[in-house]
Each structure stands twice: as structure tokens, then as C-alpha cells.
Amino acid sequence: MTSSEILLDGVSLSHGTNRVFDGLSLRLPERRVALIGRNGAGKTQAARLIAGLLAPDSGRVTVHGVEVARDRRAALATVGILFQNPDHQIIFPTVEEELAFGLRNQGHDAASTAQQVADMLARFGRAGWATQAVHELSQGQRHLVCLMAVLLMRPRVIVLDEPFAGLDMATVLRLTRYLEAVEQQVIHITHDLDAVAGYDRAIWMQGGAVQADGAPGTVIDGYRTAMRDLGGSDAFTDL
Ligand SMILES: Nc1ncnc2c1ncn2[C@@H]1O[C@H](COP(=O)(O)OP(=O)(O)OP(=O)(O)O)[C@@H](O)[C@H]1O
Image 1 (spheres, rainbow, N blue to C red):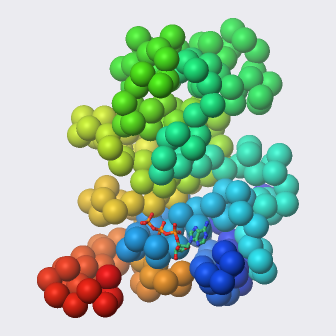
Image 2: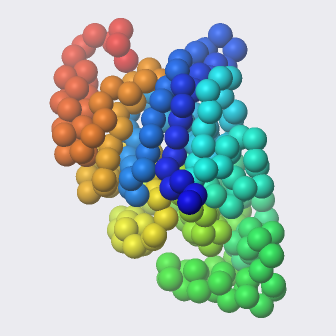
């Protein structure tokens, strides 16, 4: 049976002299996992490891049985990632071309691809966007295009790095409902603590390590308290 877990096993990672992880281990079998923590805590680097976009210096990362940094073809079918910045993701001039690209790569024919793209646009009330030039959309709208592209690929795991940044409230609510309904495992990095309060598990990262891990209610409460204490202090040394 194929494993349906994400495993980080003794992962170390440095960028030059900057040690990001030093033997980080995590086992994530839950369907909805939130990664929270302060700026620079290591959330995005963890996301990139899980997506196989970065290889650890030592240790192993496997996602549903796939060693994602080594087996890139299997990794692409296994993990979809939504980047913090949509402009790191978008390649094509129009929305429909952007959304069609991954499906065509997966072997869907032109008619099936066009239908799936049209259905996805309609689901988010954006049917009119098909021939829209991507560069004429706002940043939040481009973010939504990227999310639709990831959802269309139907990977087994979806990694979301601040997916709601810059989106208006109605769109956020619609996305939240949609994400609640998807069957995939979701790893959600966010500073919007309310968005992940109902998740199965929350992990608070700090300095490349796990500061707290467990039920979101408890972990988020602890994080909020610590952040209020830090924010209320005038000492900038720990910011
Ligand atoms: N290309 C890079 N070169 C050197 N250091 C890097 C690089 N990318 C990230 N880092 C370092 O890795 C650490 C973790 O960064 P990461 O982007 O994962 O933080 P984060 O928790 O996602 O923060 P944020 O909430 O601000 O997005 C930081 O100390 C950062 O300086």
C-alpha cells in the first residue's frame, strides 16, 4: 500500500552559512495541517522541501511514498504548491493557457482540458476570465489563477504558502469552502490564524524547529499569547 503521509526524516538544510534546518523530523498523516510561525521561521523552506523543489543537505523527505527531490516526475503528480508570489508561478499570457498547461502535460486532450478549465473558472465565478491577459489582473486575481491551476492538476497533496494573501473577503470565504471540500491532503502556511483554526493539526515553527505541535486550538492560543507579549514589548532585540 502506498503511504499517505509526509515524512521529513532528520532533515538539514543550509543556504551558505545560514543554517535553516538542523535535523528536523516530522510525520504528517493528517489531512489538514497548518504551519504557523513568525517571519523567517522556516515555513516556506519546509514547503519547498515537501514539494521537492529543494533537496535537503542530509535526511530525507518523502511524500506519499515518493522521494520528492529525487523523483521529480512522480513528485509533480504527487504535490502541487501555491507560491506566496503568483509571479513566480505564472508562465503564459492568458488565463486559459495558464490553466491548460498542466492538464495538457498530464496527457489530457484539448477538448477535455478546455472543459475542465471552463468548469474551474465557473466554479469560482470567473468564467469571463478565459481569454483575459494575466498581466492585466491584479495581484490577488493572479493568486487565484495560480490556485485554480494547482487544483486542476489534482495532486495528492496541496501545499499552500499564504494562499489568501491579497485576496478579498468573499474570495477568501469561497476558497476556504472549496478547500474544506477537496479530498487532498492540505498543508497550509499562513499568518491568518482563524483560517486554520478548524484544521486537524497545527505546527508552530520557530528558528527552523518545532516550537509547538498539536491541536490547533492549543497551538494557536499559545502562539497568539507569545506574539502579543512580543508585540507589546519595546525590546526590538527579539524581532
Ligand atoms: N535563498 C536564501 N538564502 C539564504 N537564506 C535563506 C534563503 N531563503 C530563505 N532563507 C532563510 O531561511 C530561513 C527561513 O525562511 P522562510 O522563507 O522559510 O521563512 P518563513 O517562515 O516562510 O517566513 P515568512 O513568514 O516571512 O514567509 C530564514 O532565516 C531565511 O533568511
